[in-house]
Length: 124
Image (cartoon, rainbow, N blue to C red; front, side):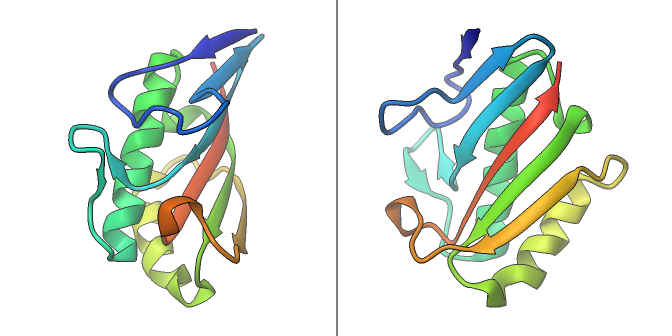
């Protein structure tokens, strides 16, 4: 197993890795909408948060030698399922060609009160 880390995405805020690569798979930890340059949320708007989350996942995948086109499964966590449509519109732009398997769930509370968090598994 190999730990994946990049300064182009927010660092882990606990005892976990941004991603772990094993064999030809990379398992990305959930990303929240933190701008790695400022350490702050991009906004409170779920569409803008989703955009940042997917940029963060992209950076982690790149550090692992993969990209969003290689994602096979995502899990989307929403603080409020009423945000599904806004999140899904942004998500669809990032996965226009490759449409990975996905689960979307409402969580009682996300880290730092984010409105969206996304994790993924990709092929390297």
